Amino acid sequence: MDATRKRRDSFPLISNSEYEEMVLSVLDSGCIDPVLGLLEGYEPPFRPAQMNWIARTLQDELREFNSDCPDRLVKDIVIMRGLMAPTTNDTLALTLTRAWLCMAHVDDTCLRTVAGSMEFLHIFMGSPAISPLGRYAAHAFGELGRFSDGDFLAVYKFFYAHSIFGALLEQEYERDDDYAIDPQYVRDRTGHGEVFFSWLHFFDQSFNFWGNKRFWILGMRPMLDLLDDGNDVFSFYKEAVHGADFAASTPYRRARREGIPYIAAYRKSVDSTLRAYSNILELGSDTQKPHLENAMKGYFYWKTCSGRYRWNELYPESLLVDIPLQ
Image (cartoon, rainbow, N blue to C red; front, side, top):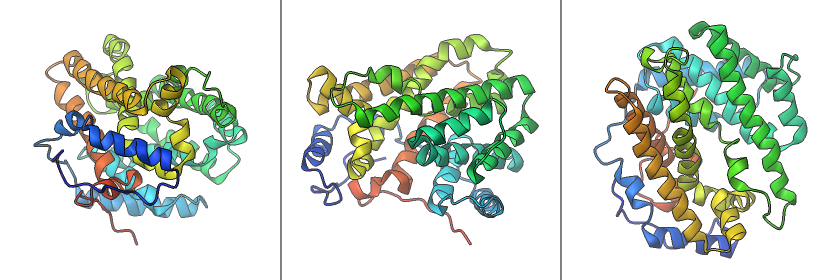
């Protein structure tokens, strides 16, 4: 990953001039370069045949459940799982990708309303699903039971319900003009951070939740920081294009809350991401470190190569990974 690559100097897709200036301040500062530098020498662990099969299988399933999940999102999550959680077990790869896809689609759609959020909280409390996506989500998490004991599956569902509760809190941002809401409290409960790291339980015995709870107790805090703040580090342009998402983002709200420039608030997200990366690696054993390092670098790489984050609009020479769908 070349942190000095040529970038654009203007961004016509950002309609808010203030937001565009903030995006430019990030790019001009170079403060993201240390995070990009972690990807030097990184070799993406893609398995194209497996990923293509998973994408087509999920597309067929979504049609059967009458879900309107966009093909673009299917591709993005297949790529994400392929990078962060590579495995030769095709069934496990499909099962995990399915669960992540549901979380992403629910996050993009249902969790923007109280009614949508509550449907999924009720699902995880045992109520029957109402919507097509709700039924598909119940199916997805049920399939995870093939690779886990029922107790851990309950924990995994709790982690997801935790994020749904966070989305309920985050909806208040649309009505909060004085930025009084504590963004860190809300941020800790959004982003599915606990879910996206606890998948390691399925992959290696050294991450078994019941056999190594000490690892999870010590590791969950930096894992949340890496996924949440790392998302802020790579999402600033995508959110500026959207507009409302930028106004709800942690760096923007932190800047308003603390009365500091946006770039200063953004640097805090960068520093937190780098600190979390180091802390997670230090915590891991020799057996765990390769899995942890690949998961974190895969997460960062996905942000730069997925169309979801529009990185190629910042840096036109960026690699944009795609998967053919029928």
